[in-house]
Image 1 (cartoon, rainbow, N blue to C red):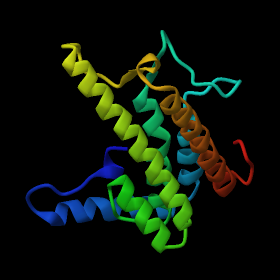
Image 2 (image 1 turned 135 degrees about the vertical axis):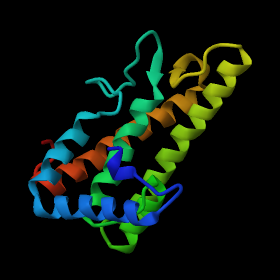
Image 3 (image 1 turned 90 degrees about the vertical axis):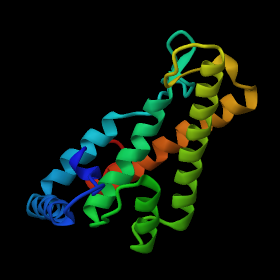
Length: 175
């Protein structure tokens, strides 16, 4: 994953371009890579239990686990369709331009991404203000009911994008 998100921060850009080209060449030569990577992406499920409720441990939910499926979704499609962007939002924008995903899908994914970032920031400000160690664990008790419901809806929507991924790479709703 580190190499798929590599970007040039300083120095000779030629080394960066060569490495990025090599990665693209290797993925093109090995099309089965995409199915393996897609299967890996599907391992990162949003934290919902069998009954569709937010899965917690001690009333805490990992916001990092909420982000991961979206980041992997964007990275996989970017690799498959030769999108060179390394930022999730830029990847989604490019995927719309290449007609891989719809504008509505892009807007929904960005809404999901933005909402989780908002919760993460709010949570970290709350933790910092209480002089606690700042982390990605969100106490659902600190959310208003509407925020919890919105988070649950968002997590369900992530599953629908994973279903799309499964259809695109395996031809079935759940690979």
